[in-house]
Length: 434
Image 1 (cartoon, rainbow, N blue to C red):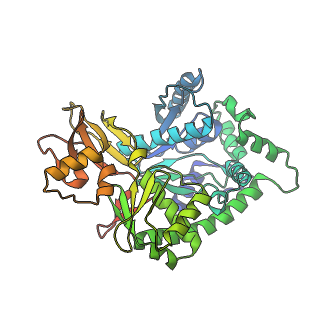
Image 2 (image 1 turned 60 degrees about the horizontal axis):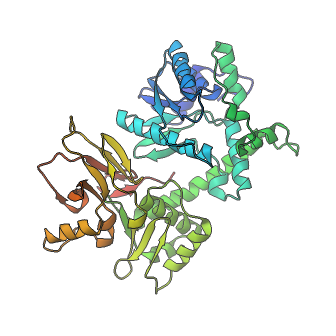
Image 3 (image 1 turned 180 degrees about the vertical axis):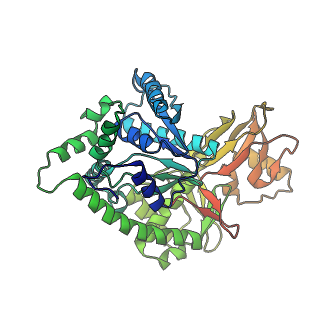
């Protein structure tokens, strides 16, 4: 590990990745905005097997020109790149940075999955960590938020996000570029106090208390991160031991199992179940989560809905976790590859496309159609069947793979749940725990 006085080299970078158990011989993707941080990442990774992903958010008139210039700059020192474009009808009126971040990671994750890339590197650094800590402290975040950004975390499936610079300051990264004569692009939004992150950055430049600096705050976030990882270990263990996940996008568990672990573990596990069921990256507000946790402990519990996920009684001592039908994404066309309802990856393998497929919830009519053709039987609980994915031509359900229903004469798209993987025993395991 280098210190602030040491020049950062390619060898240092390789050693950092190796210490993080990253296979430096495998193909990797790097997120490059064109700014100093990501250009330093690209420069240090130039002799590895990397592909730079440059996202054009189309939020400023200059964005495409800057993306093209970044690709040319990367090519000048031997790094190949692709531009991914965020297509949106209009600029978000609020939380612009959050919406752009979500779109950026979705685009990069989808591209990595398409190319079979398992590692995505980003250039988040020590100063970013300190700013994140301040912002989350201001929002009243608990341990999970104050622990800051993890050096490694799962994005979806087998793709992992890796942040090798969290122990390095922004100045150290700039030093690398200046020493190598490589330029970068300064995004004007990085100096606009319209954004809270910029306000936090400026506060740290002139702190109101002695010792309130980026290094100290990042150190605090790191200590809290160790505590968070310990808790998440037991959350993952509870989910693995006590929940049965189904590839159709539903799960079941016994509410009494929540009493076998501390309340904090149970609450976090419920939050993960909601993220799994909804396909959304964030869970509900804490007070609503606590209310659900308390309701599940009651013997008279009959059901509840939270954040687009239904918790329904499934016989004595069992709770079914299913997507709320009304909250699911409407039917969507499938061109080649798409993500539907945040839960499923859909990939067409027929070239050229044979049919104008759509994907959507099986729904009430679909369930009636399947039951009519299968002696009134469903292979999964009715509540789960309603929001399971099905393929449609017009209004006609032609296949529901997870219900064993389909037109075998047609070449159907490949359908996989984004947040599940198979363990060695064949059991479906939720991979959303970071």
